[in-house]
Image (cartoon, rainbow, N blue to C red; front, side, top):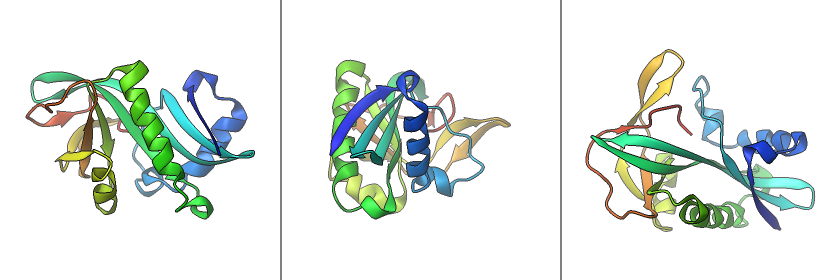
Length: 170
């Protein structure tokens, strides 16, 4: 297994195509019609020349209540079906979480989870803080009704209030 973090500007056409193959097994594939933010970074997991798992990272300032928070968005946690149950996504998530701390130095990590995955992410330090959030879409703001989970990174106390991602979801 080989793992690397690359900024979106550094992705080759081959790496982009491989990520698109992995995306078909993530939440992105189920919420068709939703416009997603482009990632700033990706953690890519390879077995030889096959990208078997990846995680996207997006850095954004969002609003929680009246406070602005610097978020490291974790999205598209996905492993190709035939490579699942081997620890690839868990290893990639650990690398992504460390990357949020240093060098990104965000206040919190934030991810959207399916209800089925909440307990899995809670075991590695994430907490549900809301059951929905406001997101931008091409036709305006809308509510996304999925569990919203955060991971304390450089700050410990999540603010009180509704979450406005101030952009597209990840």
